[in-house]
Length: 380
Image (tube, rainbow, N blue to C red; front, side, top):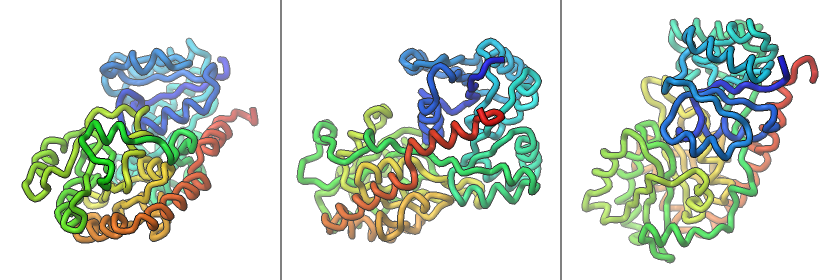
């Protein structure tokens, strides 16, 4: 075997989401000649794969599962490319492939955990599988203290000691204040004097767009020129668009469904405030693990309004760089937004402090160096 890293993941572009951007950034932190990605088949993947400087092997299935066929395929990729280390883009369930990869000479395995491992740790059947994964890998990472606290309860002490923090890192040169968002404002028909609240995330129930829209009439009453820009797509799109078409919102909501990830710094540049009042669903089984968009927005100098869910509050300093709100209270959301829209000085100060906080706590360079250390085999 050689000395390369095989990244086994379902979470890779062109699929969009926080985990996908996290895994992509971790791949970029490693020398290109040392990386091979094994992932699922997705529409338009060629557009993503061709510019990358490392090989991406696409499976024939749309979702990788730890089946015997996928195990054999992963083994072939590892042997063909000389990989002796593995990074699982999500420990559950792909970490169950660990024994098969050990059998072909892989010496070091790191498994990333995210929000969904929280519910794996809470349900009897999946808890047993998570313990199997933890026993097989060398390191389990966690993105937030909230996730660590939940996951560690499911593990025996020896495997709990494998938990190491590896949070997403943000590139401060890419996500920075001072970019020109006027072109996007013009495209969306937003005047230069309008104040923009941005909500960028997948359109799913957990993100709280419905509560944000319920709060918006109160915001408009105090700030008639305010515009809410919703960026992203997902299963809740139709329901949210119908809610936004209500007369009470007076045409003040814009949807941008097709913003490529490469354009996101300019999307943040078009906004004055960032708000995603995320909430925990399914009796605690579906929390917000952390929230990369909160870090990106803060790095761009925006004050952040987020919901009290999971690890999301760890991305800000409450009252200093943004506000943590009751995600089920339209009144609480509206009050936070109105206070920020009414005070440009406070917005600016919070944005500056938020950028400094992200640079200190969530640096892309630190995340990359941490991963490289975790992947070391016998100190090399």
